[in-house]
Image (cartoon, rainbow, N blue to C red; front, side, top):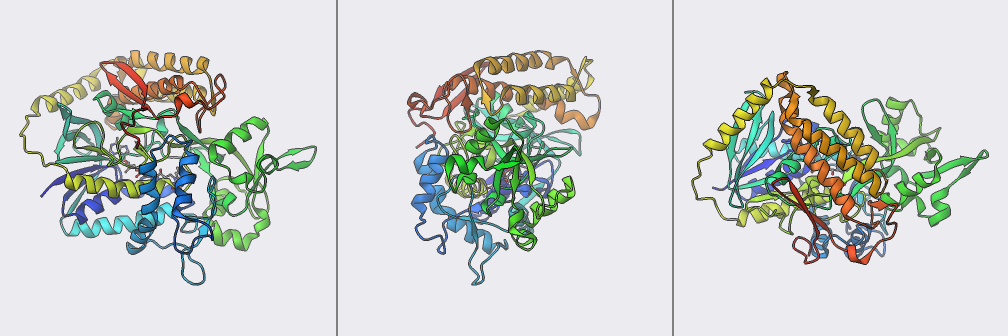
Length: 544
Ligand SMILES: Cc1cc2nc3c(=O)[nH]c(=O)nc-3n(C[C@H](O)[C@H](O)[C@H](O)COP(=O)(O)OP(=O)(O)OC[C@H]3O[C@@H](n4cnc5c(N)ncnc54)[C@H](O)[C@@H]3O)c2cc1C
């Protein structure tokens, strides 16, 4: 029986574990925290699929075209086609596992409008879609665990992959409970470790997603893609811990953006783009908001409390709880903030990386969203990608070669011991905070050569002092050893943004404000002994 190691237990990891177990493979599902703490539970607004009760005129072709257009035509058509064609089956799969979708009177799943879509096609569970889906997936994973097909391992942090001659044989983890390094070998390894929020500090997402796995794999020879495309969500509000998302569902239900001038409301998105102006793709709305130079508000009060509580109850509760705003009576002060990472581990249409036996799915992988993701397409991509990867893994070769990894394991153990005992001027958390400041200051909605080069310089400096860091408390062990990987990823993100001398989707350069045909391809970045190589994937090595 084949063994599959799935790292990360959000929607992507859980889905892949279930799909692999269904195909009679033995699955080890590893994460530092229970699934209930994965960022996936935050997903609010919904998941896109053209169902049989879709809007008149809607079609799977329209879903494909909207997705390609939203991504400014650098996502591979075949991958996107597979995604959109599979979407109705994904919804059925979720329903069969017990996900409770919001339905119309006749029992059909309801749809709401989301940005950048020609028709209403976002299926949802109130405004807690992620929680409902994770709950259903966890139940199924437990059932399969009872059958001995899935083994869940908690408190395990990725350390490094065991790669030899371009083949991945397993992964080293830092076992928090044991305080030691542990190796898990597998026939295939699927990475599902989410986005890169901690690079930026306060975002709408979870700082548990810190990008370390992507950064470390990059340093081990795994190629990354489209890192410069970072989505700013237009409607977020400040809270003490993070930027809180005001779901796109609010605009989907008719919410209107405006600013005030001489006591009058200016509905600037509608003035610029007409009736559907508030539902333009997120990159467009965020840039327009920033361009006004004003305080922006979002009004949904006209819907009335009864409808608000029925359609978007969590948004009502969150605004009330964290900011004391009653959205049935007053407008919400909103501003754009980082929300999603279109870039990540480069994978082909089977979700395979450039390293054999190593796959990536969910938000840590880059495949379906091009230069900008449409709302509601991410959970879909996480589940569809998990199914595709499970298929690929099922047909992949079984590892027969016996390798001796004792040297690698001893090296990892020694490095940890050295780090723990090192004397230093730079506490690790201080550098993480500085990095977040650097990234937020230099990779904003609008970038230029000057601030990108400044960002690279700052990160290079942080990298130069990493050897002198100190973390003498055991709970900081992961923070200590992960720092180089995180900083290397940060430098790669800035390097890709400097490389793309045009504006496309979520990447806007004030010094190159136009979209250029010469850049109509994904960016691929690779690492060789500290050197970065950045190129456009014009040959379709990953995109097809
Ligand atoms: C507030 C909010 C609302 C959203 N709403 C929607 C929506 O309505 N519709 C939509 O389509 N998308 C939405 N998204 C995006 C979507 O939720 C995510 O892209 C998706 O859930 C990512 O799933 P994932 O499984 O790839 O990652 P995650 O859910 O982030 O899971 C990552 C897993 O990896 C583990 N992990 C992380 N680091 C390590 C490590 N070093 N070692 C081992 N394991 C590790 C984590 O513990 C976790 O288990 C929203 C995002 C946010 C932040």
